[in-house]
Image 1 (spheres, rainbow, N blue to C red):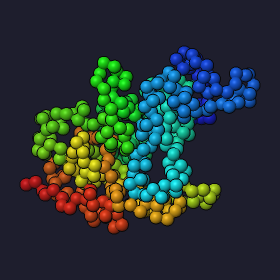
Image 2 (spheres, rainbow, N blue to C red):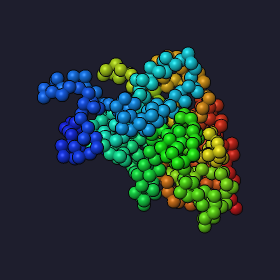
Image 3 (cartoon, rainbow, N blue to C red):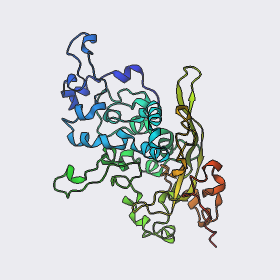
Image 4 (cartoon, one colour):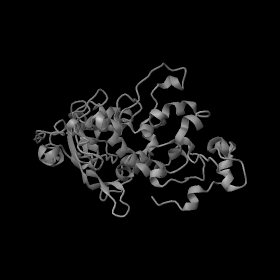
Length: 383
């Protein structure tokens, strides 16, 4: 994604923007400041990013979304804290919070980061001259943050691997599967917006695969016949129902990362995050988050870049419960193929030890953490 020119970042489209609903509102309503021809005076107490306080600046016109969004994963980054809390202890929280604020908080998202500007982590700037886009741009908004893994996989930017079939043949955008209900963190059920529908409530999600949030996408929503083995493809009916996640057969290689650490910049002396490297892999293992919505026995796994000493810059032994969660985590690669290499024949998977996470493929210090996902014996060859 090419960077925006400085003038592009701040230029308000004088023709397009005033013709929109937001363009009919005085600048001061959202940005405060002072109505004055002098720039310095006009910018007195200016609020540059009003959607940082959506409940104050957005709620008058968008009350439903503004009430829900503060509990969303995009706003709270709760998924990070779910895993950090599991691996750490309450007494280590101050150091973990300092680390999080310095290195992770920049991924926190506001309404503006999706609807009017590029996210701040992608250097910000208006994407359409201050025109608010109802549907976020896949490249300027979604993959601006989710680019290194999801974006590269979905758009086919990993060498030798085709783009996702949903993009390649259907030109589907992120929002075709990830709806506004999910993005805004809806927890109160349909009746919150639609009075004619029955009431229902569920807790805010605590990570991106949390089944409490019923808005998350699932392959079965569009491909239920295939998921239940009721179509014409024999491979679908050959496996017991719910044995395999769809990605096991329909994803290609994807990115894993190792060993994220805080390093010190030689130029500034400031701490920054770096990883030892990333690589393409494809691993099948046991499902670490089995549930009613995710009942599969086998799923695809991705190595996440954390180890026991990841945050040692901020203190010693900050992750004393490191083994509480696997470092090979449940993943949903975004490079779906109709026929992936492991599904070309039965024995492309059965008997193929290369694509199963066995103990010999796990770093010695991480074997205990990964016991829930390690496969003890590879499914036998089909004769």
